[in-house]
Length: 333
Image (cartoon, rainbow, N blue to C red):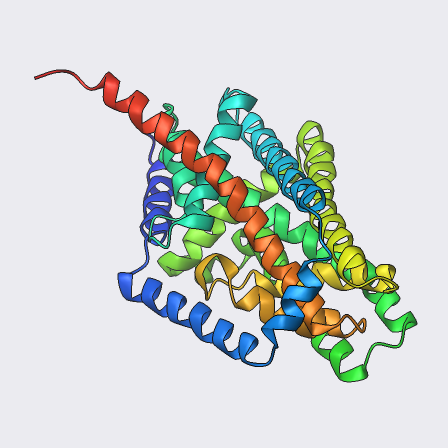
């Protein structure tokens, strides 16, 4: 290993070690999810919720689950593009299996072993370095958030056109600005003055910035990366619109679509289990700006969460197959 590679290896190990939070953090996230659910459901009449949900057919719900399954394929494909940029030589089918396993850990296991850590671990298990394994996962996250922030900014004039409340516009603008600033830093932190790199944490972020920006400089990778990121978020928007149109007809679907990116951007704050509670609270308020009934917003949010959990179940099956396969490879003593 070269002297230049050693600091990057230390960076990866530091990032990976942060992927396993203290168990008390998991308990706190579970408490936040439970508390937010209590606050949300306290306002609603269960009979009204049930009556609204009966407007959804099994075929429509199945179609929404299928949409998120297709979205999982697009997400795996995007990550595979990044892996290919780093010449890791992994098959798309292998990448898909690892992404499903990551979805299982993210959506269904309240453990400290998160989906991103699972993805990095399986890439490492496939014979690749820790540095590349972790940085490809983090780069994938950054590009996904960048497209989401970009869509939120593109749709902002639509919110202004439909006279969304000024105080809400201020909050939405602040969220977009904060996300854009953070993402800009993610691409350029390694270009800060040399004296800032005396802190180890800043050096870690600098290595990540360098790796992420390198993908942007690859013309073969950048076009499919942007296209797949757009498709991933388009699926979320479409699924939400389909559910809203069935539960509460005669809504302004364009305004609802314009609100979804910033809603999902805010819901990504990792303070609850798989986003439960936070997503419902933000969606009720956010879609309320488009005059969506709170019951419709809540049912839509829950069905989005359950659809993601259903995709996570597929990942659980893939994980069990992988565990059994690994067990058979163990030597008999």
